Image (tube, rainbow, N blue to C red):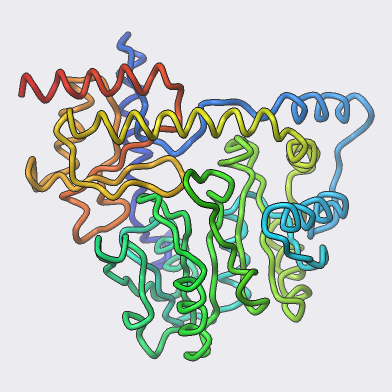
Amino acid sequence: MKASRRSEVDPFIVMDVMEAARAAEAAGRRIIHMEVGQPGTPAPAIARKALAAAMEAGPLGYTVALGRPDLRARIAQLYRDWHGIDLNPDRVIVTAGASGAFLLAFSAFFDAGDRVAAGLPGYPSYRQILKALSLQPVDIDTTAENRFQPVPEQLPDDIAGLIVASPANPTGTMLDQPALAALIGAAQDRGAAFISDEIYHGIDYDRAPVTALAVSDDVCVINSFSKYFSMTGWRIGWMVVPEAIIRTVERLAQNMFICPPHASQVAALASMDATQELEANKAVYAENRRLMIEGLPRAGFANFAPPDGAFYIYADVSDLTDDALALSREILDRAGVAVTPGLDFDPQRGHRTLRFSYARSTADIVEGLARLADWRASR
């Protein structure tokens, strides 16, 4: 059988880097992982205990398509606790990870052929999911002067949607409320849907991130239990949509997914009461960030914007190479440190950038920085 043209999406290079690192470990090497955006910590202890109890209590069958009502209500409470927003729980839709939320959002808001804009560098799966749905990604080349975030004057007039992430992957930069409001207003002036990727909310350092819901109700917010709640493999997330679109998304969710994973919903609900453990995780990221900001320049990687949130540093390595993929392979082979070339995040300019993740243990970060410095000294 012939594959569809829609299926011709680009590979996710970081996954290839992970496989190369796995092969090196299988051969007996110790690899320091700075390539993947995944917490090195497990799901909170209270979440694991809650799931164990639920599994003993009875079968975990289908839930309703939009997710368990108690979980949706607890997520709405999170917006009161974090942002002071009184959110109707009906607007909260639990999804099979943030990826499931993007599929639902893109299907709900856009028709085949619509043009949807997002900044570069940015999360690569935006572009690939859009392509797979017969939508047209519109790349916005952001600048270091704007901390790698789009600005209103860059938006084309003919877009049907705009995707913005704050804190962003791969840069960790954030939008303040005036900048976020300006982008929302510019999208609305064009009749474009505004989709706010907020999956790194909770992982911030000097100031708290702003949710798009603090600016407008006519937005779609996407979040996840993967990052702050340390539940990547559980594949559980959520979205908040305008009230008028709830039933539309419900019909799509019923047919695409039936429901989010019930077991993951149980764990997610309990995880939201693990504040002490989660804040301890965040303190590790903060210390790792400090070490990276100090240590990367000593290892020869000095050109980057210090991150406001998330757990990444996106470095310009044009003084070292015009082939970041080859450089990442050299670093893995010679230093035993896995890093991600920027091609995933910016196909045009990413051959001169690397992303470093500092989501693992502080001991790993210390060792990784020492290895990078030794590699650079011997190069």
